[in-house]
Amino acid sequence: MAEIDKRFDIHEIAAAKKQDLERFVCNIYCCHSTGCKSSGSDDIIDLIKEAIEEHDLEDRVRIVATGCMGLCAQGPLVRVEIKGQKDVLYKRLEPLVARLIVTEHIVPALKLEKGEEFQVPEFLQKYVLSLELPFFTKQEKVVLKDAGNLDPEDIQEYIAHGGYLALEKVLKTMKPADVVAEIKKSGLRGRGGGGFSTGMKWEIASRTPTVDEKFIICNGDEGDPGAYMDRSILEGNPHAVIEGMMIAAYAIGATEGWFYVRAEYPLAVERLEKAIKACKKTRLLGNNIMGTDFSFNIDVRLGAGAFVCGEETALIRSIEGNRGTPRPRPPYPTDRGLWNKPSCVNNVETLANVASIILKGADWFASFGTETSKGTKVFALTGQVEHSGLIEVPMGITINEIVNEIGGGVPNGKKLKAVQTGGPSGGVIPADKLDLPVCYEELKKVGSIMGSGGMIVMDDSSNMVDIANFYLDFTVDESCGKCAPCRIGGKQMLLLLEKINKGKGTKQDIADLKRIATAMQKASLCGLGQTAPNPVLSTLRFFEDEYLAKVGETKENRAGEK
Image 1 (spheres, rainbow, N blue to C red):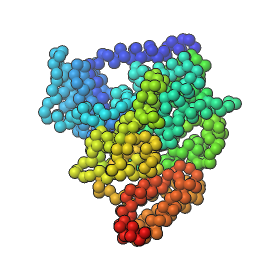
Image 2 (image 1 turned 135 degrees about the vertical axis):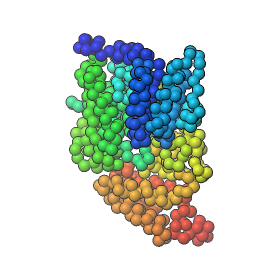
Image 3 (image 1 turned 60 degrees about the vertical axis):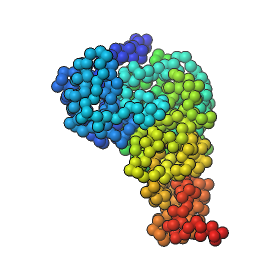
Image 4 (image 1 turned 45 degrees about the horizontal axis):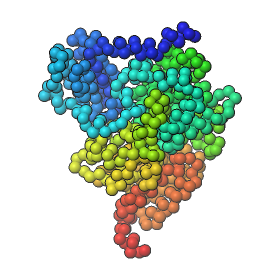
């Protein structure tokens, strides 16, 4: 065992990898996430490789296929990093331009004397994206700190960036109770939408007696329209999530971990499986990890795309091979979960925070955010906004700062009308309330939720009845049908909305919408049914005039009747 530990010592791996990387004068980071791949990044990478080989620069220039760089609307993205020079980020690259980056930027820049500064040629300037944009400068990255900066398929590079040091610290210097206490002190809350204290969940799970097995489960079943945070985290740095899961397993006494990821995320699944294989090869998974008594293994289960399987009890049933339907709680999974064994379910982003908290301390993490919402949050900023993409911001930042500063505002001379947060379970927040701090409690006050992190911007051309119709149609389609309030109530609400949208509705239909929505919130079995009415209720709350106009009424007439 001692021989194996020495051979796979992470400090030796880190030192060797850093020395290897040091020989490169230039690094070309090419975004290779799902978004940029769909825009042609595979061709861009191939052409850059060809050009580097043609100029015999393989020993001086390294090409790195990375995870998401964030500004998805401007992809394919390529960042050129040359020692002694300022980084240059290129956007919306075309095949010919990819070769020109090598011939007209990298080749001449490498010939400069020390101290000389390279100027990007004028004909390439239109492809340059300023790294001083608020989109980049106003973010605070914890989960995404290495996204776009390393090869997600190279475990040695992750280790060279400090990977698995947190695991080593935990296994060799901390007791499980110490780990739970540190996470609890940090204020980390579940990033999947519920916002439950992660440390408290771990504490409950750690105290649950078990005869033989206990499981840790990573919920990667991200299904909200417009949301791709978890997918991007897994694509860009799967080892960060694996390390977080291993630390969680040690803390609660779990012997086995499960990743549940939807099959529609093939790249995320591929990189996750490669990362797990690499961990097994380097003895970071298996028996007696790092020479300790801790043994742990991980498996991956693919979801078939059912939105309801994002709910933890439905997810557990799906892993077991059953139809993914929720069950009443209690008992909670921490008592009776996977195969009736104690199980702790955490979201991808939640686990991706863990290693940084262990290394830098709970107080460091708690220094970000608000009194009740600590740390940072990853959002997929989409819709009618200039700079759409993946962002990470400190809790407590206002929606206005996210949309108008980081996002660059609404394009094409349109006016901002509303922002929808929390996906189909969330609500619509009007423009006059966008100074609202982004935190669990404040969003709830206006009828929305944090959710997993979808944030969709709408301009003044958006019709709120259409928006409500879209989200309700989604949740009705995704309902498992197990409980009547969701199965029947959701369908009846959708029929009423469609009737109103066609101009055939009445004031009574609006009243019935509210009545059924309230019943669904109170009586549905799981979070899908309980929150499905949120988009309808929030649009009725802030944009009731649009509903009244659909039924031939006005607020003034209605007030007169009262």
